[in-house]
Amino acid sequence: MKYPENILEVAALGPDYLGFIFYDKSPRYFDGIIPEIPGKIKKTGVFVNATIHEITRKATQYQLQAVQLHGGEHAVFCRELRQVLPAVEIIKVFSVKDQFDFSRLHPFEDDVDYFLFDTKGEQPGGNGYTFDWGVFRNYPSEKPFFLSGGIGPEETGLITGFLNSPGYNKVAALCHAIDVNSRFETEPGRKNTKQLQEFKSKILCQHQ
Ligand SMILES: O=C(O)c1ccccc1NCC(=O)[C@H](O)[C@H](O)COP(=O)(O)O
Image (cartoon, rainbow, N blue to C red; front, top):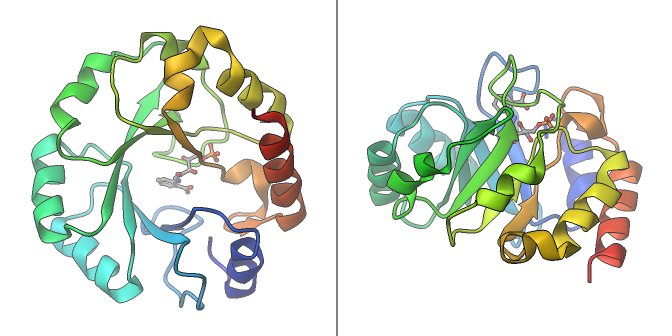
């Protein structure tokens, strides 16, 4: 999110999280003021290889309830961050191409709250492409995760198929949130509220 009036419009749809990109090479880079939004929506700072000091500064400035780490942050870094910001959820992102080696998650198990799976692309995030969710057949963890990467208005069938499919049963139950971004934008950082509303209604209606 980037623009105050658009933040308020999207907040009115009742998402669980709202993301603010603190990566200055992104067209969605956020440096503004976050208007007052309902406390149950978790303000989430998105970082790429930022220092603990930078993350702490933004977390304090914007009263973030979650941070999403999109760079090469390692498990020890996440552990240190947790010590400094114990009340803030830590979401560690992994980029998936065709295959994914899930053993990479193991070192992070005790130090993050959620994993987030995004599509590997030219940029650290916001690439707008999906990956093959079939990789989740090999998901070895009990940790809930965010499903991300190129999810757009046309993906509702795919999502509900994934969430309801017996083939994925245990994994689908661990899908904590659906993360959407560029495919719902009218320009970088500005979300199409109508499309988001329809998307949310369809998912809620189709997911048993
Ligand atoms: O969106 C960005 O510009 C961005 C830049 C650098 C790191 C992360 C970024 N976005 C983070 C997200 O969580 C996106 O929602 C995720 O990458 C999916 O984006 P999209 O493929 O556009 O749906």
